[in-house]
Amino acid sequence: MKNIDIDSFRAQNGVKFDKKPTLEDFGASDKELEKTLKDIRKDLGDFQDTLYAHGKYGVLVCLQGMDTSGKDSLIREVFKDFNVRGVVVHSFKVPTPLELKHDYLWRHYLALPERGKFSVFNRTHYENVLVTRVHPEYILGEDIPGINSVSDIDDAFWEKRFEQINNFEKHIAENGTLIFKFYLHLSKEEQRQRLLRRIRLKRKNWKFSPSDLKERKLWDQYQEYYEEAIEKTSKEHAPWYVIPADNKKAARVIVATILLEALKKYKDIEEPELDEEIKANLENFKQELEKATE
Image (cartoon, rainbow, N blue to C red; front, side, top):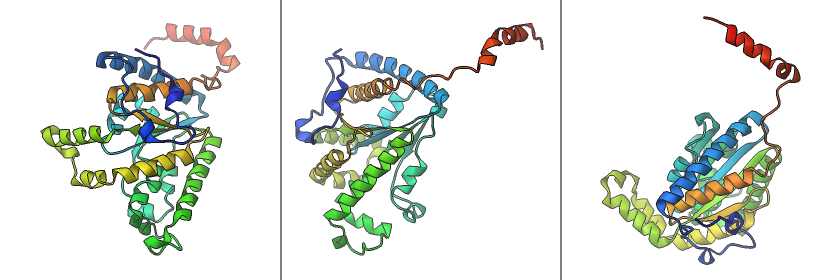
């Protein structure tokens, strides 16, 4: 299997999806990809144990992509070897009435990772510059002062929202949250095949919704707004990675590799040393336990 150059997937100097591949398999078979992922996710699980013991950083993993891009299965497979208490997955749906009584970032603040843990956002705060941009009428439900009709939602509104998101991410990064943002780059044809599979396979029927076809007709708009959102919010402290997603197994390997290689660069994340007094008495503690009886 070819080596994975993680920098090649990082969004830099503007993003044009038609210049980015949607398919990559590194010349590897499915079995080779599965074996590679198995090895990487074990190392990720070990890293999370150390992250927890260290207790100074949390890790936020953001996943975005068109319908059927493979977000759910990627989460299941990449984080399979984590301590279940070490990773929390949040799937953000349509805002609830309570959430709409707060600003649009409020529910995302509540879901940020504790120090020592991973949080995975399955769909993220970026829905607020993607879905709402394709469907600006949704913004009216937020009851924002000065926004009384769709005509009030102009370019300046979206620029301000990009600024707010950048400030949000800068703030949490400065306070110990390590941020990774992944866009699963799916081809329109592969999406068509996956939607057909949901219809053809009875066990997959529950995943299909007619709304998927309605949103598919807006494909070009979504692509345009994704490109702009990624370009304006990919920062050193909160980078975007564009992941070829037509091959799910390869996409999982890429994401896992990026996470592991990037996190290993934080040399200060290590298990804390025992108190010197405790360390000096470890042999005594061991002997006490060995001599103990029920």
